Length: 225
Image (cartoon, rainbow, N blue to C red; front, side):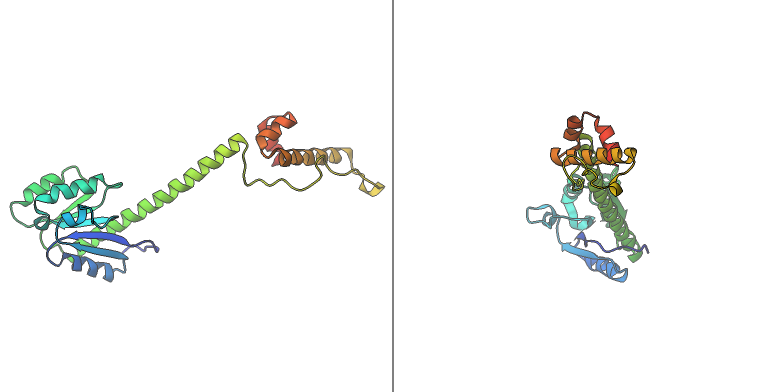
């Protein structure tokens, strides 16, 4: 089985009146998966006002869901994100209506009565992978939003992480002895760099500093690099 890093517990609701919840707990324990199994006897315990709240997966027997099966599947569709579902049939003619309900719903899997332990383990692993993928997606979206905000700050000249170096407001001090005299080219470059740093420090943003210095924002940014 796939190696998994630590993350929050997978919450699985089981709508069944037999031992299906216990079988799922056994598979989670044998594979060292962090899974919380919530056993419910009816659909109303899941979709009612006192339901379990956030759910990462639903396992339901067609027999236990009864006439509320369509309501349960609609609930998994209309959640903030589609909830992976495993439906367990009865092996009787009423399974046909349940099969029709899952047509076109890729987040729902079907198994016959008394599913094998390996089938339950495969579905649990799929639900865990969906949870992990959504976690990575949420992390990616957060990083992308932070990057967009940083780019907008850069575009408008508001760089919060830039700290101008300390120094006199009008450039470096003049030499006081022969040893401090440097080539004119180096002195001019040093004065320009200190003058720009002082302007940024006093104006508070690159945009305002570029206006005060009479140069473009791009030129200012290039000279500060």
